[in-house]
Amino acid sequence: MTLISNHMPTEELQRLDAAHHMHPFTAGAELNARGVRVITQAKGVTLTDSDGKEIFDAMAGLWCVNIGYGREELAQVAARQMNQLPYYNTFFQTTHVPVIALSKRLADLAPGDLNHVFYAGSGSEANDTNIRLVRHYWAAKGKPDKKVIISRRNAYHGSTLGGASLGGMQAMHAQGGLPIPDIAYIDQPNWYAEGGDSSPEDFGLERARQLEAKIAELGEDNVAAFIAEPVQGAGGVIIPPSTYWPELQRICDAHEILLIVDEVICGFGRTGNWFGSETYGIRPDIMTIAKGLSSGYQPIGGSLICDEVADVVNNAGDFNHGYTYSGHPVAAAVALENLRILDEENIVTNVRDVTGPYLAEKWAQLADHPLIGEAKIVGMMGSVAMTPDKSARAPFSSDPGVVGTICRENCFANGLIMRHVGDRMIISPPLIVTKSDIDTMMRLVVKSLDQTYASVKADGLLNAA
Ligand SMILES: *Cc1c(COP(=O)(O)O)cnc(C)c1O
Image 1: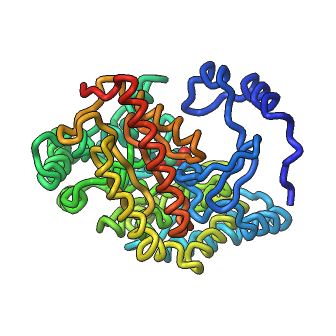
Image 2: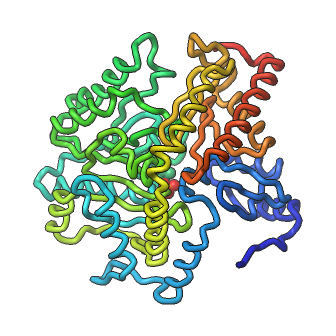
Image 3: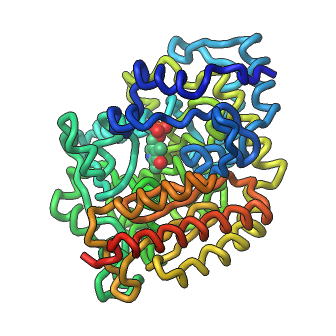
């Protein structure tokens, strides 16, 4: 075991990090001034920082450590694969055993006829692949005008130029000249924030039908695909009304467009089934996968592609696209071992039948908390919306995220990682949480919400916008 425990003092590590390391999605100067948190090890659901403080990781890293931290088997598989074949590419009419085995396993796991995998190093790269793949597919079918991809405001599909363009995050579009051409957007199914007086069911239908209207507006002959997450993750764990996905599926079936389902978070057990598409009855033509595919132990992502699309693309000459690390042997071997553990230890079915329902019951009780306007959860991804006025579902008069940040800081202080998206608090714990872990987590969640309510009230922030 190489536990790097003889590290420098925390202050020195922070100083060096500030001097040389630029962090993603971070205001660098502000972080450098306050000092970064250094994580040194992790086991199960618990992180340890450089001061020895233990933290319950209710986000599974970034929604990815589905099997929990510290599984020796993955380390051993990686070491064995590095010794046998650390790297070879899959470009030049070559392949290797781990990528063959993983592809076969994914084809077996995936619903429908998603029998083909194009690999990437991440979810963002996989969505870049999807953009080029669907446009190339339609061009190969003699319809080069079918190139617009419809997505949703407040969706997250990654941070590359393509991924961030597909995403509907305004703050991301505002930097670096995004989006790229031929991406269109419809509204998200966030009933709590945008549903007004309509019922969730009516609102779900209305938001889904925006897709049909957008296809009509653009012209079906110009639309290549629609992309969506089964449940928006980074957008705040927005669980759609029950009417939403059936209507989207009907619309996709009725029109000649491809359905890309971004399963980067929902895939590999997060919603209590292997894929969110199963939880919501969705039939994707293409699926984006990453994160839980390797439980984050290795960087790997990909596109799962149906027979028809793969056939057309395979028969259209060279597809001029690929990554040096597409189907990386070590990442593929580790992913395969991760899938074995998820399957053989019944981790997905346990989320569906045991721990998911147990957590759902506790999570729903948060709706009674004075600070909470909505508490929603599916499988192991949940959210609460904080509000100064429950019945009105009102936002705070302070800037979005002010109260969320206060709550997140309370969580950290209590040894809990729970993330905020604006003034929503979100969780996505490792899928291996036990009932007793859930009890521990919920105690910390309630304690943090209580503290936040008290301080927000005391500071005069409990005002509706
Ligand atoms: C995280 C995420 C991505 C991007 O994956 P990366 O591996 O960070 O590039 C894409 N789609 C969804 C839904 C995600 O949550």
